[in-house]
Image (cartoon, rainbow, N blue to C red; front, side, top):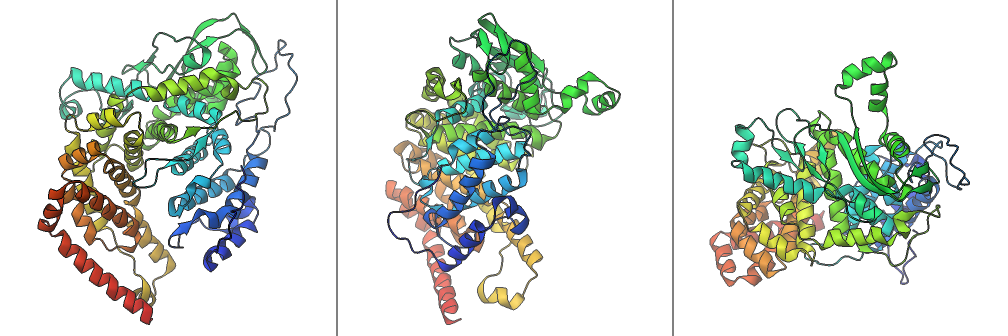
Length: 592
């Protein structure tokens, strides 16, 4: 949705205006060819300066994303004699999907939102919701990352003004609705056996984080459905619990209202139905050989997530209102069945990022216009009721599983990717910052060995930042005259641990604003762990250090003993030395 121009005149810095004019003058379809990946080099930013660029992207989304039948999952699987409904006026999926331009625009928007104030003006949630069903998993995941960035609370803040359409909230619930069940299964498994360490080292079962194996060969598992709830939307939100067999099975329980569907045809009699299908072949290489000779099984393996959804919807009579719920089950099952750990944990990223967005956004009043008269994603009130019920429940088991992902994300455990660690930290911050879940979340965080896990993570993060290379700046940059490729490599190495550090400081910023959070940080031994970060003068880490100083300041205001402990740890000496060096750098820069 187009952002209106600001009512007051805003003075845009010259370097920003030059870049804005260049981007706006270039068609979005050509941006990926004309410009390198967008990088932030403008200091402290204001999103109001970049409104023309965001509107430029929105115009592109309106033409190439809005109303596409493939993104709406409105393709007709096969012609049906029962289908007498008139064709709807929607954009056909035969139009090539502009993957590269979309990725450039989405990633540029993420960079802008991460580095600019006034991110509440961003208003493209409806388009990004459509992209969650893109055939390209990278596009869908980047769209979810952009939503997560747009809804992210500023450090120290407990509010967010992002409004999500009901259709988007329904899709987010479909992606993260089984998170509590996966976490509850892990709690039962750990509680029934020995410690996590014994489970990892002595048991034949691999350690699982949100249902994805961390170590050893992936074990096959299936989904076991819970008793159904009433109502179609409620039925779609039932995730079920998991055993340790038949990985890659789609198990989908839903209530069919009967009658006719404009995209499937005759739905048959009303009633409860269960879909149990294999989402991925047992052996991809063997099946590829079978498919070369006409084998049917591998045809299913080579299908896209959308094609699998359309086939199952036609076969089992899944109404259009539940199509994305089935699509989400198919996509997540196919991802987590991958033998590649990074690909398998992409399913966990989808779940955790969707949970973050759902927790940090508010519902838009009214409904969004859609190209379908019977688009129950927006018009069915039971869908929004399911979202409300999901958000109202306490989630201590989710907190415990998030801490397990942090524990197994440490280098010595070598299993959980850094992207999942970052998403876990963001999810903890979202739960702790949500008024409904704050009390139960803080209580769960103080239980078991969770403070020790966060202590180790803070210390490890500070050490990783300290060991990162520091790129030259100012006179040193001119004197060294490094090639651009070498300088880019130094910057990449310096930025390697920044995303996790940002997420960690955001969690600390959320915790330090409450009494219960400060008690937890006292258990974490925050001062000894975080104070060494003040020595870090890497120019790529300035914003992390700035937020850390803010956390320490609030924490010392809360506890009078913390100020004395800070001095005893040498904190005052570190700050004085840093101020002297920064003053010298400022004088040298001014003289130059």
